[in-house]
Length: 517
Image 1 (cartoon, rainbow, N blue to C red):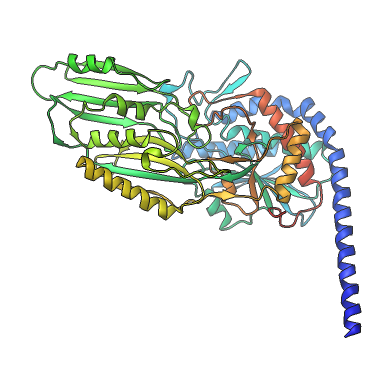
Image 2: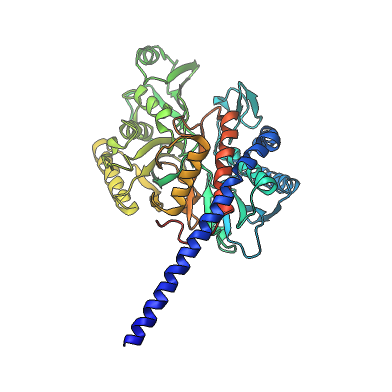
């Protein structure tokens, strides 16, 4: 027994000594790597910074909305060509494009993850065409400038700088560019079915300094016909539409009324509507022509998960404007439900008062009214859910809200929706998060805490992944906005932050269990 004890003690000492040696070597590698930070920053400012604006303008010209197959194909060809001109290995990998800066043979892989698709756009709300990008007053305007083509180009240039002026790499750096993050979000799952994930990844699709939690993306849909149950009005609703996508605060909502019999006389209604007050930041116009009256409300679009408070909801404003002026039926029911749900941005109108000290409250966007399959129309409400309730529990709650509404109004709203997503979080004390916070401090001399985001990213789809930039705190996020724009100075500043992180992570000893302390 004594011999076994001595042998076990000796083995433990050897293990401790080996652990100390590994830590010393890792610390030495990190010191050497960080000593090279000045070289990469100087190289970027002198050389690659000149490429940022022209490359981003080229990328923004591809209208890569969901379903535009030709635009996606053309952008992928451009991306592969641009990456190879920068000296990288690049290849299509199904719905994902891989761009690689190799490290030593067998080196672990550090992933940089972005998406090249963009969300839907209503060109009527833009001051310039969204896919004809322009530079004005030091900013780049175009759909995707912030979300997420700006970070795509920033990552490419940061990798180029690292290749030319960085310390010796201990990791392969692999940029993954997805293609349907803004629509079906199946691309990363398809990719991982036949490709290995990076050992750890930075998802460049959110906010600095680092995102510790992402709320769940859920939606309630209610569908009904636009038929009339009873009508004491001389007109009926012939058209009702609002918004373009669930993740965008709607900046346009419209309703067309058609006169039923005889000569139309819209004066009473238009006089009544013109004295009604709309919420701040929204306005409406009335267009009477013959037997039709067009009512159009304008608001301001915004990202429903990241900057919902910056939006001005045209659909909720339309619902308030037309309250009591429509015949009983499906159109009036949809607008009444929209008004109820939109009483605030946190779900109070849907009897959701959940709150958490770290996560805050829900973000609730009364988003669209669009034609439904088989006729009728569907109202979609996007909810960014915090921990507490599960998706099935939220579904049960909301279906109860719909049932109670139907009983009160004699309505026939049919509920549906999406509840499969769950909140995602990382330990703010984990090794990867702490090193990213340190990189942000070194690059900016600022020390903000990790953030919680209402916007979901690929960090949910990949192992050992965390969202890291590229938007700076303290500024409203412009992704999904009309006239989406990014200051060129912030784009350059973001590259410098990313370079600090890459010099640390890609040029020092590999991490084990990166999302643990």
